[in-house]
Image 1: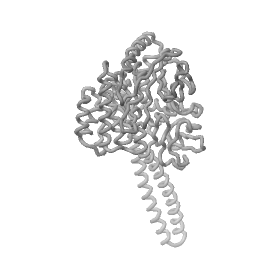
Image 2: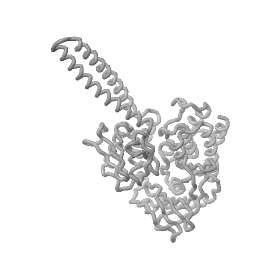
Image 3: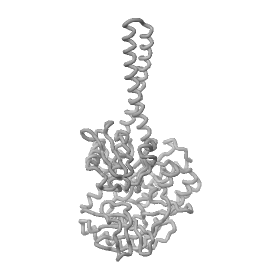
Image 4: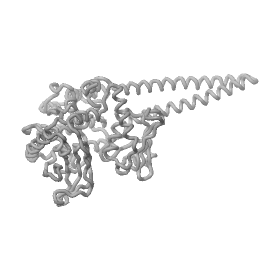
Length: 478
């Protein structure tokens, strides 16, 4: 199955694994009802045996007690499974680049600290018998430096969610903490999704990258690295992938900045390298002219050791994801006020010549300052250059429209992502990838105008999405 077929299936049909989970839940409920019937039958036999005299009565009492014990154990086991599955759904594992927030049910295992930073992780191990068949014994065990640990049953998670967790661990956790069988499980998940007629979400955007480039080994810079004759010092790594990385750093005046690194040398195609460098020179001049109080500024660019660097302003505050994680979903009036700011920011970027498409307009890249104003950070300058020259896919799959996954992002792709961000603010959940949003159909109480706007913005048909003037008008009147 090619990418387009996979996208179509994801867009219009529920994933088969979800149908299996629903069928499994129904089966468990039916079995519980049968177990309750057996429990009642054993009670009836018990009292009937008491009423009888002699050996026959004694035998019936023994049989009744045996049935009662079996039924009680079975009922306890099945209710426990459903409870665990329910807790996994209503209290999901929340993953960020800084760490993870574990479900409330794990609070005792984690010594009262559900929020854990990745650097606290001591070991991450997967346990299974004869391969990952997702039986009760298959689990992921995370152990932390303070001696606490939590066991996550693989059976209670969707394949896609397990894959996201593994990707997060491989990206941000200490390499020494990761067990060798992680690769085996990642491979198994990809094959399982393919057997269902789907590609793994990481495969959808990596396919295009792999088709264009042959990547050599890329090693991010360690903390303490000095750049530009000690003008900048790397303090920590924010993330990396392919042949790029993002770092926290300080300049020679002690001011915090963000540095993006792009290793163009890693590209095999000389034509792509030339095109990319030309694109970088044009776009650097344009980005340097951006002067908007709600967009992080490009401060500097330089080349060192065949790697290209872009220095960006670091804006203090909390991301929208952090705000919702700490305080829960927002009220509609508050969300609309923030959405108006989002639309104004995107309008400014898209009015540049040529228009600047952000490609990663998500709750993770929008900072709420102390004065309640939004600021757009992590402007994908380096990756924007790469995307402009090659059509590479940039962004988080929950917020990416179909054309962006195909490497053809346009202005309205940012508005699609904006709709997903609004959904997150209203619900506290990431939107389902490649799904047209209809919050009222999900039972979420919002105004009809706002629901219609989100539905239109997440259409797979680019021509059906509203423009920025229509978005602002709807938000002001909704």
